[in-house]
Amino acid sequence: MAVSLGYQNVYRDPYGFPKWQEQGLPIASTPAGLSAPVQADADPTSSRSLQGWAMLWTLLGVFAGGLALNLTPCVYPMIPITVSFFGGRTTRDNPNQFKLVLHGLCYLLGLAATNSALGVAAALTGGLMGAVLQNPIVLTLVAGVLILFATSLFGFWELRLPGALTQAAGRSYSGYFGSLFMGLTLGIVAAPCIGPFVLGLLTWVAGMGNPWLGFLIFFILSLGLGTPLFVLALFSGQLQRLPRAGGWMLWVRNLMGWVLVGMAAYFIRPILPEILKIALPVAVALAAGLHLGWLDKNQAGFRAFPWLKTIVGTACLVLATFWITAWAMRGPGIDWQTYSQTTLQEATAQEKPVIIDFYADWCTPCRELEEVTFHQADVVRQARNNFIMIKVDVTKGGNPVHEQLLKQYGVQGVPTIVFIDDRGKERTDLRLVDFLPPTDFLGHMADLKKTNQQ
Image (cartoon, rainbow, N blue to C red; front, side, top):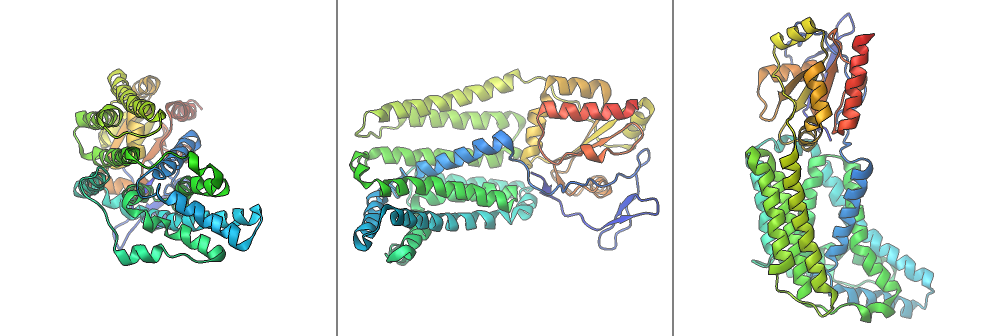
């Protein structure tokens, strides 16, 4: 996902090279040793941070989160109400099963419409969020709000909505509109339990800045939340097999609370010292595993519950162990150089291609590149032997040299990685505006080396 930096107004000189000018500022000049690059054809503001397996696993996780929300104390008691509501539709209208399915689809549509609208609205603020999240104070506030809502799920305080709003949402209407209305207002009725989780997810979606992805994520969340109620409505005879409400629902609510704590650690991580960037998520996973697996004393009337607690607790401990092991076994990273005319002149003298990484600490794909791709042994070896590697850190902003480079190279967001051959010309077909795995990045490096050999 590339976070927009807001540079516009591209002009070209008589030789076809781009120049940037904004609000009467002088046209940017080209640094010595490099010709001005042609702007990449791809739109670097497009959000592509979730692709392939990453997209699939993310959507599966969101769907699982929606399923888990059904087990919270606010939603679970609504299951028999929902089933009786749909059962009343069959008795009153004497319909066939097809009409019952239509009522269920109206219910799911109403639920999806509410949540998906929230996702799109949050994603449309993406450019703003990308700029705002440069500020450590804002990151601290976001993490603080998530921790506050987590304490609500842990039972330290209770989130309540005004009674009039709850009563209005709980009204019943007849016909298909009644099913639609019930889906539209489920989020209001269940807000004390699902509200904190949804707010945390909204913050994450807003940071990605892709309305389509925001819609998809919250649509999948709605399916996870609404599908069990829909299925039970169709097979209402199976209702007696559901476990009775009890302390196990408080355990599920604690699980959602730890999810919010993990999201808080995710947002605060960019401004932490290097050692805490790995220590904090490990500590959260360890604490969550011990609490959910063994310290939590809530019980349930079905035999599988102790096994469920043990499995979740063990999974958290395994995840913490994996993070520690991956960090301990990680090799040295790329030895980056800061931008300077001297560095560029050395690249020209040595006939080495240049790779420039425009980076920011608050940018998630930037951190993925740094921690995964730029620590892979083959990438590090190629970078050390065959390339001049330059990092332009725009985390804080305000550096006139960096601002000049952003304008000159037409960088509209981070991450942006510029590939320049030994003649000082950018290979615009290789420009990256998102995370790329080590194998694919090695392919880009090989293509750039081929240019030098021609």
